[in-house]
Length: 122
Length: 199
Image 1 (cartoon, rainbow over the protein chains, first blue to last red):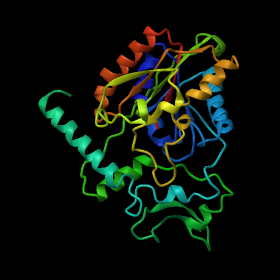
Image 2 (tube, rainbow over the protein chains, first blue to last red; image 1 turned 45 degrees about the vertical axis):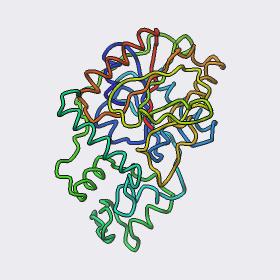
Image 3 (cartoon, rainbow over the protein chains, first blue to last red; image 1 turned 90 degrees about the vertical axis):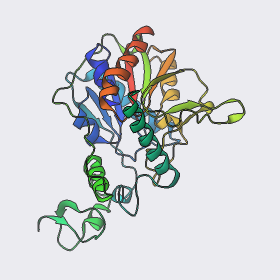
Image 4 (cartoon, each protein chain N blue to C red; image 1 turned 60 degrees about the vertical axis):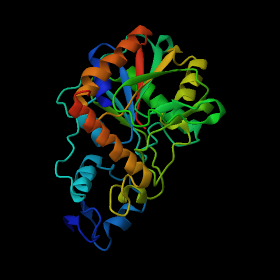
């Protein structure tokens, strides 16, 4: 996502990136970034809460209007829940990121990619 | 009191941080009276996959610079497109879901921006399945919110097509093949700015 954003910016199209993984986006480096400190899956706000989604979108629109330099990040002021338990077990043995069918699909996709790369079609 | 690495949670992630006397990191961070640290996904994925026997950590894209294009005209006169890696897809007649591209890697695809939202869904599995769902399309593909902004005059219009990029394993391909293809399609539609969303 960030790589595509960078290419667009380099070629004259302004962008705003919304996202929950602050370190990954900022590590890559984008022009404008709205950081939403929610779980992966909620990059544009709270589910079934149009008012909140509008607040998040509006932050992005204002960022487009006001940012004067790249790597400008704004953070939405909200927290996902009263405590941070959702953050604590991400990517642990107790709570692997992918499991079951999702894990199998990921491994299959990876295998397929390796095969394509070997065959020179990627 | 000192800076220390809390290792009192065997099998879990050591959390580096300031640990006040008389309370563990868990109780301190759990009070909700502070804005806590964001999740360090790069560290966590590296440590997790190392612990699972993968020897070579994933190298996340990194650049020392960042290109920047200022807005050329007011938002109220701008044409906007969504570009997303959320694997958005359209349900077939009768609501069946097309899984034929489920395993695609790389490639750019486009959808009409006026596709009824009831027909949209995400095929993405890389989200926090313990904390949330992908049931509300607008939280990773904010099409209805953008339509409402157009109605209010806050933004000029929506492009006829929105674009998806399948999550690729090859950063080089994303940067050198997929990104130029997205650019080409945006220019073809006279798009002024892009709203970029992952899942």
